[in-house]
Amino acid sequence: MKLIFTLTAILLLPFCSGYAQQLKNDQAHKNNPYYSNTDTRKLNVSNAEWKKILPPDLYAVAREQATEKPFTGKLLNNNAKGTYYCAVCGNVLFRSDAKFASDCGWPSFFAPIGKDRVIYRTDNSYGMQRTEVICARCGSHLGHIFNDGPPPTYKRFCMNSVSLDFQPDGFGK
Image 1 (spheres, rainbow, N blue to C red):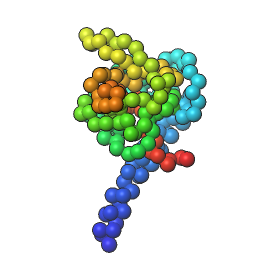
Image 2 (image 1 turned 135 degrees about the horizontal axis):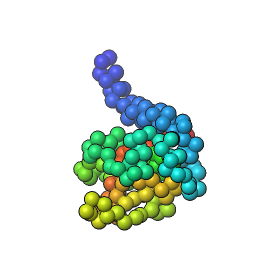
Image 3 (image 1 turned 90 degrees about the horizontal axis):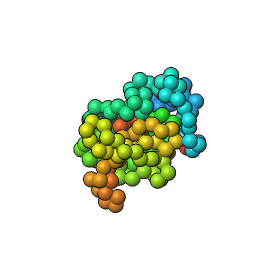
């Protein structure tokens, strides 16, 4: 009997953790009138307005280009099948089948779900020349892109977990 319970718990764990994450996401977006997983219209919202709506850790990364500490993000070791969205506006960004373990300390993807989902900007901060990845819908900082990823793109979209929401496949459908 113990074995059956243990096996059942192991099989349900990914679903339960996905469910818990979704409940947390829903609560976080309760006060955000701009959040939508279906609306693709570009947003023009001031940082002052975002500061009223977003949690401080998300505001710091998304609107002030901060970076979360490596190996601490909630989605770093997420291996569930599903879709990643912008945590600020809900824009669909990545599919789980484009995620890979890069050992850099942040969730990494080799391609966005569509070329129109992100935009790129030169970032010369901290004495480095990098390419910043920004949400095409709300203009929020997501992370950076590097040329050391796996095939087929050889790109590594190194994203901050706090800038992403995850919805497991089959959830809310």
